[in-house]
Image (cartoon, rainbow, N blue to C red):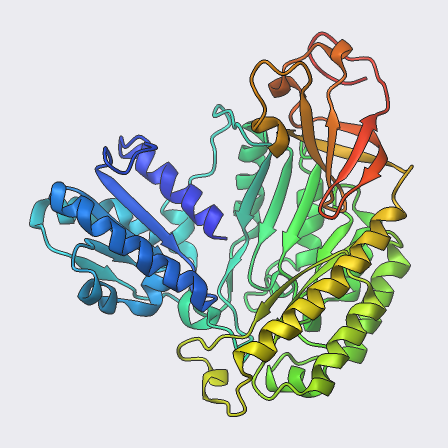
Length: 456
């Protein structure tokens, strides 16, 4: 979501005749878009802002903006701690940025704008600034926000306090934005929301499964992804969409957070491990090969060894294709900060490493079952390894993703004779020959390539 917001900010600044620069020293404007979901992220923001103090001393005309969730959370406190900041831009004020910059230039005083709105119309009426049809994109994947905020108030989560209450965008505006991205060259889109499963419910709009069906009809779009789904709102209709919509990727991220019913209740997640496992079973009934990933918090206040073992047991039962796991950390304002029975750091670290070790074993066994199979892969560009190679290298290693969101690397056959830009965005069949912990290696199923660069 921050990547999407940052892209919107860049478009606004380009419309204001700013140009991107790779050097802080030559910049007239520095915008720090922040995240407050974990304490480590906040500390990184503070460290970075401290380093900007020296630049401001050398260039008094430099404008420094702090945007995003830390800006929303801290407000005036940021300016008190870092007086060289010019603008603190809250999560609901993104589209006011050009006017605020103009005001700072004229009046030369700092501005803090963190008012929240309970509707989303101003975001769209301010020109949500999708890529225009004539604007070619260098990326083949794009993000589109479909809703903002969250109403769930999980006891550990800061999102409702920094992003506000849940509100959905109109479906026609979402479809229009995606169509413009597709005209610009995007082949895959990821729909974003704190809980996409409840999209449109409050406003009486199109349901999320129906929105997916609308997006599925967009010509030129090859793949649809979405994040994030709250398990309690995963509907029968959404599960069935994985068997009905041909462009919907065969992957779902379904954060479970804990395998213990007692901890889930303390987290205010409003589902049980039994109901979660039931929905996993239904997903696999509809799409047996669906990739399922999740989030897990270890060391939540009061988590006993038994509670943690319940989480371990759930991982063994589900056999996730991937997971993001974090040590619990207190966040300002959230109820869990006031909970007793905090878990000491050493135990949290031990549990986290135990969890990672188990998951690595699960993924290794899953990947072994993929060897020899053929998957359609959407080409994204050169691999990370290729980008580090000497320019005189005779082979080109290409990177792409399967519908299940698995990274696949392969060597570009020399007889293809095409530059990488002409290959990006194409979907080709790859036979998996080698497996690694975080990626797969394969070879293309040989096909003829037209002079225009399209695979036949």
